[in-house]
Length: 360
Image (tube, rainbow, N blue to C red; front, side, top):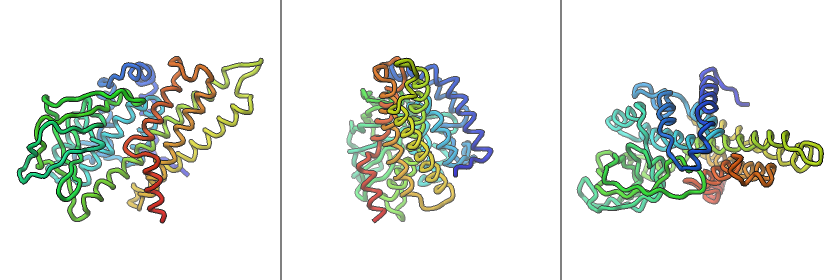
């Protein structure tokens, strides 16, 4: 059911080749140290991944959502942290600017993304813009979780106004204070807390009064769910591959453990969930590329793939036995990353409620 065109196949092959040669040797180390992989990000940006969906007129690759999901999945199958960096740069930074930014904002910030800059996105906010002036006078407002925040050149900050929520683009200031979280997974993705020390200007705001501010937030969230579901898919595939390979090599009682019915049951369960996840992810991507209604497909893809990745991570640890929860094998990292992406920016409970609302 999934038929990739020549351009999409090329993206798949090139990103997979890069991930295996450049990412695989350092994936465990950057996770252990929690280091944002600056050099790797620069190399991938030079290949066009930081602005993959940005139109060519602004210097981007101008590719579709399906291509983005392919690239994100291939990166996540080796290093989910790096995959998240580029997923955020495209789905939570480039996409809202493309859809809701003025031409002036597009010219400035989309070209910066195309030149290799990193954009950040604040997941939650308590920041309120309620003064008649063009800037907010209150200092030291905080954003608890900023994706890509550690190395972001600018950030998209959801800000509360008298009319609801809107998005403001904020250029990093050297006075701003960042604080790193000790998080379960995605440790090298640069997820930080952020204290704003200077005022936020309303001149770089994105809104669409005709559609309503709430609709903008929902639109951006829905689009990101398709891309985030591709991360979960890549993690699930990595966990399955590791479990399958180990089950063939590990021997007990004179035979490979892949011959044991319990192990076979886990492998089959993982393979089935991955196949279903792949169809859900690329169906949702195809819907948005075709300009069709896609919100329910996006929510279902994110919900199912998030659960599938966690399940595959647990099964991979089970197959590895006592070695599964050691740092000697990568499956414990897959499990941590799977659980982190499952909860990031939209929990399974929230997604289930959203899906039910649309169904009913």
